[in-house]
Image (cartoon, rainbow, N blue to C red; front, side):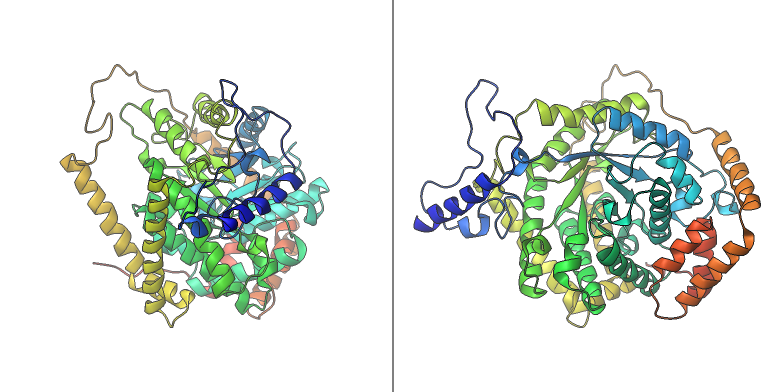
Length: 552
């Protein structure tokens, strides 16, 4: 009991010293609630649970939880051209969004220009088209990049896109050190699940290492890596697989930073995570709690991180796109609300809520507003922000947290076994052998079998199928967007200094052939208005492309 009281006293001292929001924390009926609750008697589980803001961070990173500050509402958005998306961003920010999250179209995600023959019919359809730094200028026109945090969901060509973002900030007069945001950059999950790569693993890891070095030195508040479990889960993995594969990818990037001679206490705080919030409410909460605990333990005990911030697992969450149904799409509002609540009770730092029509098309303005309001209802009306980790100590939640942690540790052991004892070589071997893909495929097949047999029930799909619904009006991106983007791109090419572009691309190629950090020459190419496709093509010619081996 003395240990519990000592822990409570430590927590109380940190809570008292921290900033809190100026409001009363009461139930709807007016009952005052404590900031946190713990055991009244000795509890053998408590060493693994702990207090908020204290290692192993099962209950959250901060002693105040959301009493200090709520999560950031960061709605993922992008469609058509940069001007259209800029208008949507201003709507989101004006309606109470706390940050931006950029969705790119498929040509951009694959490092292709809008006038590339392979881009035909895809420009602006699943996100915004970005061809050069001038598009970034338009995308953030009237949005101060020194004040608004921006997340960019892109991995294969993430580094040149980051350079265009930096150039747009420079043109706004924003100093590099004022930039704050997140770049996904996670190439491991592309080979494991999403399949949007440009080169083989080694060149991609080289670029990521260069970016980590540059950000640690020049842009300390910016997070150059968002390790993504979201796409792993959307591909069909279980919660335990999402947890383990994502954290293993994160360990791989830690090993990359250490191999570059970087100080783990400097670069580890620049790693963030991106998880899926699926429909199994308690499993998702347990997954988030286990993730924090595993990451803290491995960073401290395996990799030698000393500071608290280097041991913290910070994560963004998106509700599960794969849980949305085309049948009875209004039900998706309910699914999204449940999933968002799980993310909040799991302690997410930022959150995107999917729109009801995303299973059919990009969100309409009305659907996007409903998704935003879903978060605001949770934040402003439910009072879940009043208590830190309110489910902490629940027999079910704690047992499920322990179970997911144990399953993840078994997977880590398997990954190490596939390699030479370290995580990185195991990841590369698992990618080469198709092990990750096979494990996810098996999990996805098992779920589909249960769905078709009726063992898993989805309202409107295999049960309660009667409906009075009316057809939805969905957002459609006009072909004129592509034609206009191609026209503007041709004008830019004609108006720019061609010799400066050629010289910048030649310098970039020279850097690729040496061990020089490639960020500065890539920034120079972006400043000269070299296009995304031109930058990526220079590297494709040098490094080649990657084709996944066939699996049977």
